[in-house]
Amino acid sequence: MHPNSEAWIQCISLEKGLHPDFGSGTCEGRRIGIPYNVAGGDAPRVRLRFDHADESDPGPYPAPEGARIEEGDDHHLLVLDASSCTLYELFDVRRTASGWAAGSGAVFDLEDYALRPDGWTSADAAGLAILPGLVRYDEVASGEIKHALRFTADWTSADHLWPARHHAPTGEPEDPSMGMRVRLRADFGTSGFSPEVRGILEALKKYGMILADSGSDWFISSEPDERWNNDVLVNELYRVKGADFEVVDTSSLMLEPDSGRARQP
Image (cartoon, rainbow, N blue to C red; front, side, top):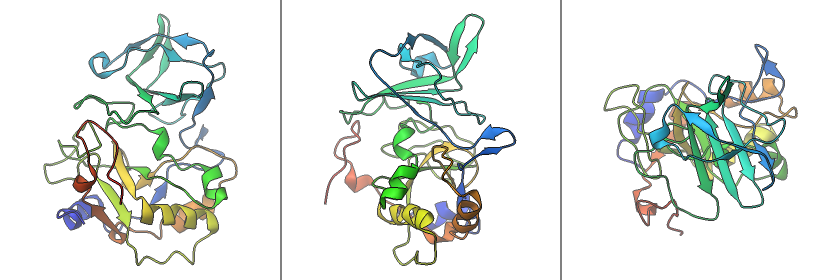
């Protein structure tokens, strides 16, 4: 456990519960969640004007026909090029009279462990990839999620922890750092939950979740999927409170500061 575990959890909230920032259908006319797109090497490519060009990969970026863009405030566009195992992620993407534009953009070689340059953002404030941290319904249906999840918090400090590369402070120095990894306590009972939620909770015990962006406290992310039951997600996840988590000290897992590869047991 990290020595700041109790303080950081309290900074976010002990009493607030987990909240699914995803589901089926729409909320206020917008689809809920962060979609992603799978494309081939022949997908059309575009160049973009970036608001934060000094911390963005220039591209070009694939823009497949009918690509799904997040309908929330952040307007993320995630495209996985399956032919080259390359992930392209954009924040605040939009089409203007002069062409495509975005707040920031990042390209990840999924066959490499290299992190972004230290101090660089991505499509997320922590400088990490978004897609690997999404809950996907097919994973839950298969019976096991095999990776850490992504979550947000309202107040964060001007600091980041490996493997995060960037921070966007909204709070005080004592607030949590981007890249902070929390896990659900081992003694938390999951037997009284639905199979879908139980799958999420078991992943939170084994892999935890990483503070990846500024946002509402304890919000976790997924792709939209019509198979989610919104009432079950909200009612059951909210039963899991901040006090049920602890912060993991991941410093011993780091092999190299600029690599996301982790020490294995």
